[in-house]
Amino acid sequence: MPLVFFYPVNNNFTNTHTSNQLKTSLSHTLTKFYPLGGRLDVANSHVNCNDEGVPYVEAIAKCSLSEFLLDPLPNELNKFIPCDLHDVKDFCLLVQANFFQCGGMAIGIAISHKITDALSTFMFINTWGAIARGSIDVPCPRFDSSILFPPRDITKFKSSVMIEKDNIVTKRFVFSASKVSALRDKYTEKGSESTKPPSRIEALSAFLWTRLMASVHAERDETKIYGMVHTVNLRTRSNPPLPESLFGNVMQVVITVPATNNNNNRTNEEQDFELVKKVRESINNVNSEFVSGLRKNDKKHLSFIKEKANEQRKGELVVFNFTSLCRLPLYKADFGWGKPIWVGSARLVLKDVIGFLDTKSGNGIEAWVNLKEEDMAIFEVDKELLSWCSD
View 1 (cartoon, one colour):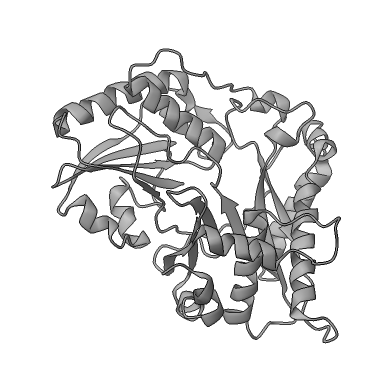
View 2 (cartoon, one colour):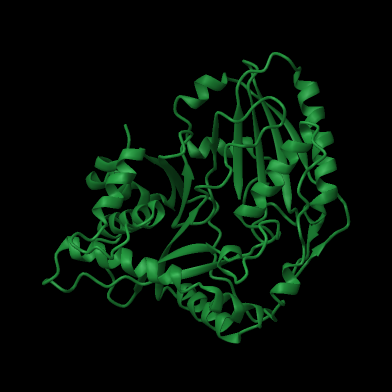
């Protein structure tokens, strides 16, 4: 999971002072988040908490921060990360401090999704920031996820995730607050008082999936199943809720398979309403009863994941994966020189992944779309898509 935090010019500190402050506070933070300073086991079954530490790199950006932020290209953001994302070896965390010629800076991190989800990632980053500012009253993470969710035997499990080193293109599509609001209205069924408007993510993911299917998969293969995947935080869906300080991948993926458009009697509007309804039902199925089943080592869950992974690996199931960092403390990472003026991601090595990030205003949404090069060439010129994006 790559993230890059950009900070404005700070004339109060030299680059050396800033870097030393980052390194010292990072070392203190790793004593609390000690698995991040360990090494992943080759079988991905555990972390060797051996305190070997994390790679820390310093780099000089030969341009000004304002120049770069005029039109930040996702592929260029990988230069702010200290590794190729397909070659992180057994590291759990890598950090790069980037200094612009103007005095601005960017902090790039790559953190392993094998051991942490988005909520845990921001707990680590913001704790690091608090320690860098001199705070001693910082939250301590809890590492008892494996007690709450007992490990399973996954030796026979084959992941459907395929690493693509060279053929992935990432584009950033920005939707203003007014456009997001209009999309929510577009996907709200009229005339039904009981219908709750879709969330920003439900509406935007439904819209993007519709455009992906209309452009990239305009001619559908009838032998394949097309679906959407969303990630769901399990902490808030447990009864009682699990603490936010619970560190790890405390999340669940849910698959929605929308109805095909073969029914000519249904209008596009009716199909839109049905799509959002199915997405919401899939997400709502991850309830306290579902979480309780996971905690009791319910084998049905792993069997379902194995089945869908097998279908995807064979090409029978085609899915677009949606993940959201919206409403998370994206812009609170203050290391002593203020909050970031912009936060971005980078080009991933996974195809068909769409990540949502809040805009700096907090009400708009940036959609970071990762597609195969030939698919992006079709998708990025879709007129309906572009009509909803900000200039």
